[in-house]
Length: 142
Image 1: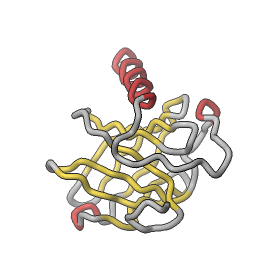
Image 2: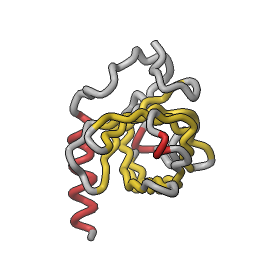
Image 3: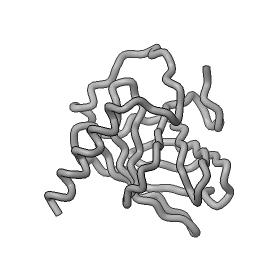
């Protein structure tokens, strides 16, 4: 199990260094975060692009008190998703999101700009991101 975790964290680090194709990078307007010192996922709203059933779905989650709550989604089957984050280390967090009809295990690997690469378990090679946004919209602000 320890070897699998080490390999997973290593692969997440490689993915985090790759450029994102899911969302355009926005100019950084606030200070960079020190991912190595992170103890919790920063509170606020995040816009996620998740690849489900062969198509991209957008989900806006609010992170508060170490947990994520779906507040808006393009897929009605994902309403009510929620889960608690667990620190893995070095800016990596594990979350198990669920509602009555859907379950997903994910690793969030944070970058210094505050975005996070999302790695599904099991990994199917999806390009998924969590991008901080100011509110519950499903659109990324300019």
